[in-house]
Image (cartoon, rainbow, N blue to C red; front, side):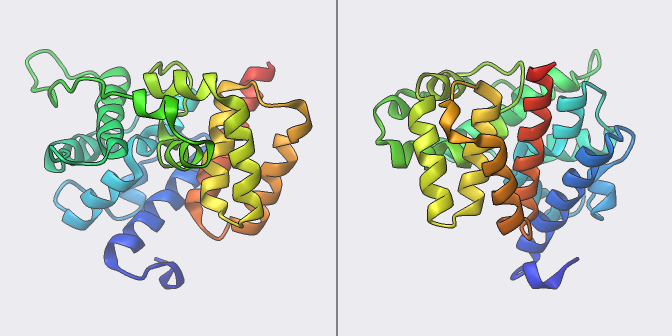
Length: 235
């Protein structure tokens, strides 16, 4: 674990998980276990909490490369869903993250016949995104960047597609404010949905974001995901 980025055991576990996701995205190795490489299993409470922070991005390499996820990672993500359900008064972003974790599990690793599923969870409301100022909209979308993946329709994705120009403005603002994580999340959304102004220079902008903020593996994760989706769209 890189202690320079680990102000707490949870922060260290999140850092390690994000690092392993980045390595898997770079290598395309669908046989590797992200959790195993980070030293996390179903009994590691801190690790399970870290998976709750990373969310469905734990399975991002399998999602983007179209391959079956490692059973160990599926088991840990399933445990995180069961152990950390959102409270009734949880923020909307938390509810959406939980919904996406469940839908990703159902899509990528449906339970075997007779096995217990993690349960159903209705798609949360997203009307608040439609009226949010573009600055707040970009912030919320960056928090929900794990939802920016192919073939995963949601009300959040539709809101992003309808406000690509606002998201582009938010990307530029985040870069100017040196908020690299927000910029990377916004850039990931733009790569997923398209529609950004040609003058934005998204590809070069993401290069700059990674150069300046790449010490945080969560930034690199979003940038790498954005590149893979942009490459897939160009083919």
